[in-house]
Image (cartoon, rainbow, N blue to C red):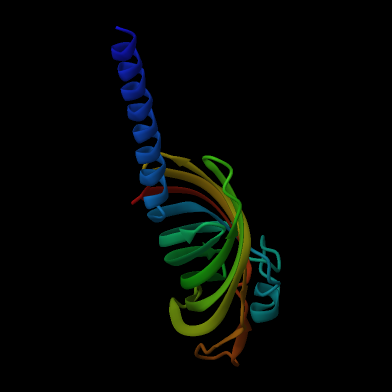
Length: 200
């Protein structure tokens, strides 16, 4: 009887150890993810007054707009990488601007069980279309983009929840509209997003 009891205990211990090992292995295997991001875009460059002169009811900086992105990322312990493409927009009575940011970043991550804070930096391109509201004329340009930021991921099984803040440094772009000299605009700004992802 004693031998049987010890055998049962050993089987239970082995089963628990196997389950824990399997769970850890499954968790480690989920180092890649697909995610969608959504939130606000806060332009910081003093560009509208420079381009058009004073516009009633506006300031030098474009108003808060929106930012939506799709991202693929992967991690190797404390290091990670993410590639993303998105759609950003903002406008006032003089100017409407939409942008497609395409970025790649490297991350320094600090895994704390299921909470993973991180900082990141990278590079990319910014495809921006500007529309002069008075005439509906549009012009599109491409500039470099340098994203720098950080956030926190919450790993809940296969679900990833997160918040992220980035500063996007964009090069100036020159736009040409009829009856106006060339105008320089800058779409540098801050994005603040909530993220939802699937880990695999």
